[in-house]
Amino acid sequence: MQTSQRRLAAGPGEKVGSGARLTDILRLAFWFSIVVSLLNYGANDPITVAIETAFVYLLLVLAVISAGIAGNVRTPVVLSLVVLLILLAWIVFQTAPLPEGWPVHPAWLEVRKLNPDVHASISVTPGDDLGAYLKIALPFGVFMLSLLLFRRDGEAERALRLYGVAGGVIAILSILQFVFAPRMLLFVEKTAYLDSLTGFFVNRNTAATFFGIVSLLLLTLLWRSTKDVDFRRFLSTLAQPRPQAKGWSVERRQGLFYAGLLAASLLALLMTKSRAGVGLTFVSLSLLGILLGSTRYSRTQRASFASRPKVGIARRLGLLVGLPLIFLVILAVLGGNVLLRAEVRGAEDPRFCTLPGIVASVKDHFPWGSGLASFQEVFPAYRDPACGVFATWDKAHNVYLEGTLTLGIMFPLVAVIVMGSLVHILVRGIRERREYRFAACLGLAALLLVALHSAVDFSLQIPGFSLVFALLMGPVVSICLGRATGAVSPSDQRGSGRYRIRSSHGHRKSENA
Image (tube, rainbow, N blue to C red; front, top):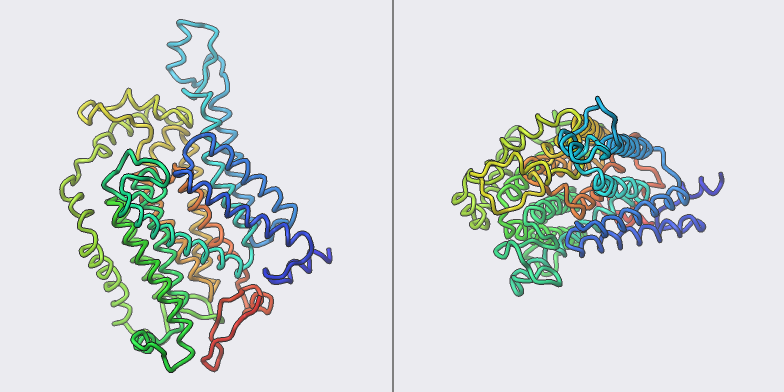
């Protein structure tokens, strides 16, 4: 009991017994597993998914043993486990042999005419569904593990900063490889999307969504580092080799660093030539800028969108109109290839052509579904030959339709529970977290980007992307559910490491770990 109290009271930089050392080792192993997954081209092959899932859940068990489940993150952890168990039970039901009279798939009735001993089931692919379930279990495991490993505000913010820096470095490396070795994808020869940057992924749309959430994170970190800065004074120091005001040197370095990484991420995003990825990212960036600019920064009062000291109507209108215009100008100047591709292709996209067939397949298999891994087997019967017959469709390019086709009524129910819970937590973070509400604004913008892009592409179905998205949402949710009342406690100040706050005298005060 005393050890637990010491561990909770200690800052994250202090080593309190073997439990704290084990937690540090788990964090290192966790980051290593994320890097390995990204270097494996999105971790889309079944063997990588199985190994990564087993490793993540092993770390999850060790994290629970070493540090337990903190009260502030217990609800999302339990909810994630409940969702996983519900989906597992539903998939087992879909794949189980069913007797006569049960809602088995009609294909099995035809097979029984040839072999009466065949076991019929709801799923068309009962042998593959449990393996496909691992692609769902992996991001949920990453989400729960990140909640346990980054449970304090300082730990979660450091994780977000490391994530942002790593994402910016990935953007720079991707740009360099695309410029100097355009036919290479990491360590192998590139076979698809030769005219587009795909980063560490095979598909340019997945890369665009990844660089989109990295751009959102870096914009948030840029705002976080300069939220107390008088920008007129800040900009005036940029031209000075040695600014006379010492207090601005830290902001200038941090601001320029994050601004440079943000520029690299936006450039990498535009070089993907993904129409939906680029467009939806700029929509999300606009929303994020409005949220950050419209919420009042205060460590002693509740957040409010309705009032902000010293911010007039003209400035509010400037935020609402100016930010989208700025991003549109960037898109017009740097995104020529994206705009050209959108103008040439227009609405003539196979994804829209096949949409009626996908909707028809959903109607025919509702409410029981056709099996989690069955889309590639079910869809050809509904495919319109006018849409082309050369490509193989193994995904619907619409997560919601494919999820409803394969899982039936269970998918929209689970989606509403998960999305509703996340939105509730993020709104709570905006209202209650005061100094840390930037994380909730980031979470809402990232959730909007991924939710909208999932309606036109399958980025969320790629394990490598789903786990990095879960890795982003974990620290964000941890911050949103953190301590929400009173001033900053001494323990939080010790745990915030190298992050700084402004004292009442206008100077910067370090908070040591």
